[in-house]
Image (cartoon, rainbow, N blue to C red; front, side, top):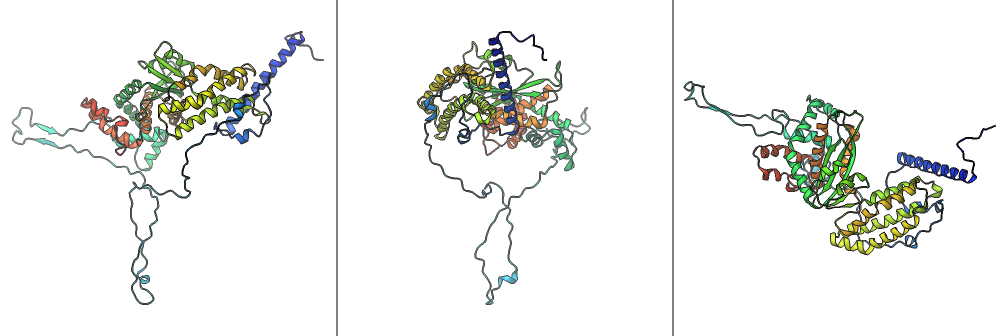
Length: 517
């Protein structure tokens, strides 16, 4: 016989409330489990096929039935300009690649016709193959000539006066690393995600002993070298009035007063004019509000981020507008959809997701029509603003209708909390509806982190942040990373030695012609 549990209430209504609470908790945990399984085994894309979702038309089980507005079912169609269909087949090889002509002729015996006449060449058939020459390593010998006066030899108290040609300023003085080698190592690690311990045996295969700790030291010195460029890029970023910001984790093993397993953060800022984009990475052990306060000191304008409340301190009391990210709202509803049982997919999660997809259709139309800021604002006022009004009305009617701890309840609460920041994007056509451009800028760092896993010291993390900043800004301005870094490492030391500010400014990514890098 089972004994009664002392913790159970005696009142029947209280028992029913307890059971209902447990059922809600169980349902929430089942949602979390289904979402975790989906993230592990299914596609991570947030794109949803309407045909696939509509296979399941059972309503979501909620406490009170809520009917979606009729406007959701009758979604407006958008006409986009015609486009040319891409042709299938192999693409031609780029014209800028050098060509080596290899001629093939028929044997001399076949050049005579059966009638006895000599055949005449009437044309040729050309086919192309893509060839590659493995990386060639060489030694640059810097020969400095010495001069002395033979007439004065032995007559001067200090001996003959000898003059030796000066060595040009080098990126790392007294090092055997050329600008090209430093650019190669930087691109291998920070663009291709190649850890230095894997780069070391690559050099050994071509007969060069280059320890990883030596290359790590080079990267730290390169990070120190480019500080003047990073400072100019930061001034340019803060002078513009729109900045997107995000952060991601990074592990640094040797931080004073912290365990090696502690999580630090890499902060990313993206801004500047459209044709002079700046992307800056900054390392900090903390994710606290003091970091954006430091990084945005002196900035006045529009700050766009995700929903992290750590940015509230920098926007509060400053001449700054805080705008949210619609992609994060969509992600909440997308996760709620994916976590539902297949037979019950739909309901409020799908309704909210459909609203957001309609807003994104307006943005897609603006991109396809290549609208400027004023025209995009006008399009949003015409097509997006009514959708926002419908979404607000729908949200007011659904809040509190589902358990708050369910994924759908969390998505609704998140949308409601972010609403004042989301709606501000209607005020300025220059503002994006989401923070995806900044998140895309952070992606190369995240991919590289999966390969090299951690930074050894804070100095290494700082150097990585600066080199990532230079590379990603160069890519955003259409430059090839290796060619650009090779030029910077070659020209920047002389500009710094001469204290030539104009020469340093000429090395900013948007001042270097694409043909030069």
